[in-house]
Image (cartoon, rainbow, N blue to C red; front, side, top):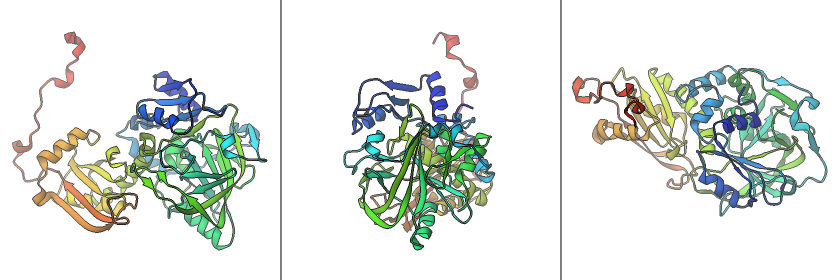
Length: 449
């Protein structure tokens, strides 16, 4: 399998010249992020020498939508269907003993100092410090024994402490339950996971579904897991690094500001704190960081959102053909949806279904199935030639949106939908797309070009 670990995936990318290797020494403060940003979406980057560390840093391993499809052994059109099927049919993982797990090759439980042990970068100008941005935070429900996996921003706030932003979702729910009993919530932070597990960590699932089991299903074989050293949490055995710890009850500390996905800063506020109890890692471990608001950040969050949005719309308009959360809309705020229109009014129904799916979604464009939703020029052409604001515009005011959108009033704002589908009663030739017969069969090499 080409993506059963970070290492195998990097080897695969190298075969097609999609990994850049930086041999010169770089600073983990700004310089590393600046160099990686120049190659964002074009090549992954391995930094061999990071100032003050022996451990290399990798960036951008899934910074392209097509790469993620390759990792899942499909194409970008079928990706969300394969993801949705895996999410609906989780496959149990496989447990291995510690001596079988590469991530246990080194175990540190004494004198823990995160910034001495790991090359954790500072990414943006006004970030409050070093942040772990590609860490999978895993916690266990003590009642069901099911685990939950998510990516949370993690600020190094002390030698063995991390500030964590817990949004009001599953991890936060489990922590609040523990905190109400005056107890800490055990956790593990996985750094350097395989790209499929990175992707499934972002799945929008009902509470109680283990994202690691979705990874098993998407891989087509059970994901090997190993029990942590100091906490009751299972982690991918082939990961590069694991940080073990506990989210402390009734403890808050300043966290932020931090450059977030909308390309603005999330403000500082008091957040939960993780007390670190152990670090384990592979021989010659690599540290994976995600450049916030870069393509890797956007696509990892966007593709699972596409799968969730597709399923929601399909309940209202079964003839939906495709969904795309666009990178220009930060893979959160803008959705383009294609449908095979069978009844008038379906375009507007799609708009409202999209708004109901996620409060983040702000603008929706609905097009016919002949429009390539992954081609921004095609989408703009549909807006230009199939949309009239007088009858095709949907506006809703005073709605909940993203608090990270600075144009809202503390998260409250307006939403807009554009129905760019062709009227069913239109005269056939009116919307007939031009084409040149034989265009698809032309090979420019045959003409010396």
